[in-house]
Amino acid sequence: MIRARGLVKRFGEFTAVDGIDFELHRGESFGFLGPNGAGKSSTMRMIGCVSPPSGGELSILGLDPVADGAVIRARLGVVPQEDTLDLELTVRENLLVYGRYFGLSRETIRERTAHLLDFVQLSDRAEDQVEPLSGGMKRRLTIARSLINEPEILLLDEPTTGLDPQARHAVWDRLFRLKQQGVTLILTTHYMDEAEQLCDRLVVMDRGKIAAERSPRELIERYSTPEVLELRFEPDRHQVAADKLASVPAERREVLADRILLYVTDGDATLAAVRSLGLEPLTSLVRRSTMEDVFLRLTGRRLED
Amino acid sequence: MAACTRELTRPALPGAVFAVRELRFWLTDYRRTWRGSIYSSLLNPLLFLGAMGLGLGSLVNAHGDSSIGGVSYLTFLAPGLLAATAMTTAVGESTYPVLASVKWVKTYQAATAAPLRPADVFHGHMLFVALRLTMNCAIFLAVAAVLGAVQSPWALAALPVAVLTGVTFNAVIEAWAITRSRDTSFAVIFRFGMIPLFLFSGTFFPITQLPAWLQPVAYLTPLWNGVALCRSLSLGTATLGGALIHVGYLAGLAAIGVAVGNRTYRRRLYV
Image (cartoon, rainbow over all chains, first blue to last red; front, top):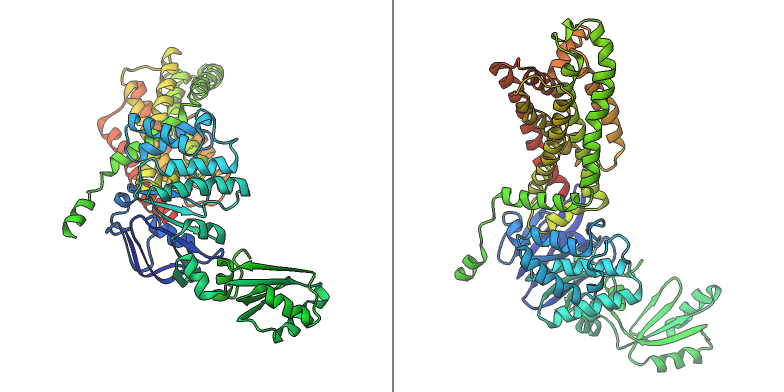
């Protein structure tokens, strides 16, 4: 449904997206994972046909986003990074106004509004002004609004950034249902748990380039170990401990500012080896590898820095 | 594949359809505030025509009316104020609402995430302002007529002229306002653009009273062109040639504003 080849976006001297290739198929749930400034939003804006590419090829629904932007956008749903709701209108009016942008009849909008508000659990707030709603409610309303034209592809730019954990889970739950219904999703995120939960296929972006592309599980299998041992020492012992740990067998080790990570197959066995060296960490944690580890491995940086 | 592509490719709708969709958005928004806006549209001509036209006018008339064309000051003033009201309405609607739409609330971006293009958003907003201008100017003209400030039935034709004057300001200032990232320069426009025009474009006194070197400048201002034509229509002294020049000048400026705005809106909304 979307095909990009050598896609580039420049802003003056700055290259935000530096020649990326990707393809998106119908019914897929596709994610761009990366830190702020990786080029995720610029890519999304190009797909949303509100940002002409500076180079390369991009085809959406078989059409050219520059020449056929209006036609493509009629078939997309967009949840932008920052809400663009009309705060002074009511919840219902926001859907009415937006539905009209697509040329939908008042009747159609009314029917869909009832259904969509039910879906995002805002039916009881239909006649309320948007301004005082919580961030999570506004986000859910934006999602409802993006579905008013029954889009073939739903674009979500950091759908849960800035939400508290509870509100985030509510949004994830709704998005997961959409995915189950077969809606094609494309989302950007810098939360690895979001990417793991919602995406069938992930692109890891860093500094405008694609660092890796696979399913979350494959990425973890390929770029990390089954388990990770996280060790924390007193700050003044941190570096000494890091040096000593070099003798502990591990596929890879990462010395972060506050923690030391050992990438191994068996975390408990490694912890025993650490202790046998006479090192007693303040805290230790054996956990499974996550997308965060993949990201660290691929880019040498943490996601939420 | 070919069949699939043909099915997918639907011709885009004409821009006017999209502009009307944006107009409907503004109308939905306006539904909340229209009552208040009607009161101020009524109050504005009552205050100005009362204080300046009747109050100050009694002093002016006492000194003879030859310099203002042998009519009462109220009659002289009303059509000038009509055009000036169109200007102030237009400037108000073309500044803060534009920055609110593109920066503070981002309703423009909501529209361009849907099928609307930047130019559609611009034109739709202009349609709404044109509607507001028509309402405001019609109310003004009605109040002026009730106060006896209108001499000729041609004054009805002053309504579209006043609206055109406003549309000209609207087009030019919106085209510029969309390029702003902060609202500080709006105050400058009000203080050093709108108020001097308001005072020195023949609204309150004929520009023949201005120093000779300043008069050519006044002739070039869009407000004077609007004031002059509204006044001659209201007094029943308009000529076809003069009317065409004024209308042509205003329409030409408006067209430039629209052409520039099509570009500046695109540049701001398609980053």
